[in-house]
Amino acid sequence: MSVFTSKVVRNLFGTDAMRTIFSDDTRVANYLKIEVALAKVEAGLGVIPQDAWRDIEQKSHSFEIDWERFRIDVEAVGYPVMPFVTQLAEHCGESGEYLHWGSTTRDITDTSFVLQLREALGVLAADLDKVRRKLREMTARHRSTLMIARTHGKHALPSTFGFRCAVWYSEVERQCERLAALRAEPFVGQFGGAIGTLAAVGPRGLEVQSALMAELGLGTAEIAWFASRDRVSEVVFRIASIAQSMASIAKSLVIMTRDELAEASEGGGEQRGTSSAMPHKHNTVVPELVIVHGKMATQQVAIVMESMVQDFERDWQGHFETIAVPQTFQHAHAAVTQMHTVLSGLILHEDRMRANLDVTRGQVMAESVMMALAPKLGRKNAHHAISRLCNQALAEDRPLGEVLRADPQVAQYLGEHELADALDPAGYIGLATQVVDNVLKAHAD
Image 1: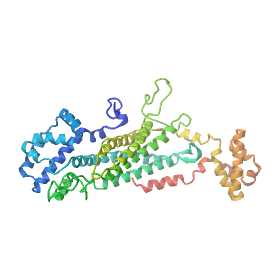
Image 2: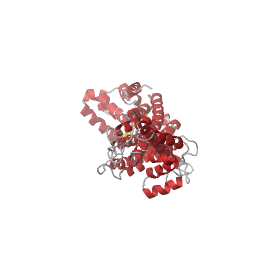
Image 3: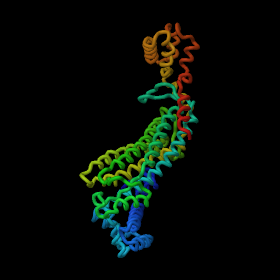
Image 4: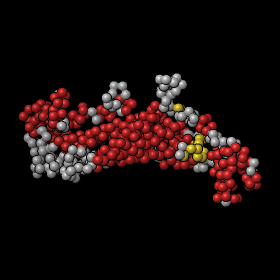
């Protein structure tokens, strides 16, 4: 069973939009579009008879593939273009002899592939923009919401949830920009004949090539790219990195929902993530799926990079792309759409965020106190002094503030008011809110 086509779990591991774009129906529709466009431009340039083109164009509207025959023939031949052309040529009668004129299988395969990539990138961009907008909204709303920041999984310093959201938002903005740049580059199709020299087309080959791409709304490559797969590998890398950006956000959200933190809960109703054994338990379902999508998309990058290494004018490595590229888009689009679902239904527990600041009983304010003492003791001496008192507080299981207030050296240099300020988490978030504002300002909505 494939998770991408399963009747039960297909929407957990992919999207209907990507299934449609990379479906057999779309592939065959693209083949037909390209073959008819090729006949049109070749007739216009006098390469094939005008009557043949008119007949092909007319009969193409009533063409229906025999799927069972197609399947059998594809399995026999090893690739789908020739069996497709055979059926279309039969349908077109005598004019069918002028189909696929001067072309080769890879011309049609690659050009169809590019049409699919262009459509898939457009769908992905639209849904990534929804995530971007949601993160921007969360960043602005929670710019001052106090919480603990964590490094290496441990309590670090006070911060705001808006600051954390701003980090996510900034990354997604960059991903949107990269995706826009990728879509702005010309999508170049393929038409070169057997080895790319246009030998079978004749002296007007370059004109046919240019006219065909114009007809399809594609750019014209300066030379055949049968064995140069860098364009495809770049697309896959960019798309996989988007999936990983979603996974990075998801990982933090999964941890925030743990019982020990309880700073967030996944929305979705009472049934979301319920355990079959433990009535009290609600697993964090969708963010975990997003992490899976990120990992799986990343695995496809190495496979597609491998397909760049080909013998001479081309070899069999293109089969890697046939498998890996649709999977990358499935995982990336699922990651993006599911992340939007998560963010839209996310339940935040601000009171727990504030309470978690006090879990270490003041230890997270050690740097704040150290910096208050540093002008009087020197930073190094202040660091040693506060480190000693932190260890004492831990050993004696006492709040850091209590130990600090009882220490003669601290009392000598810091009055009660100064010490209270140094121990207040709200007073030690640095320029977090200003940085959040700068991020929002840098990316006008």
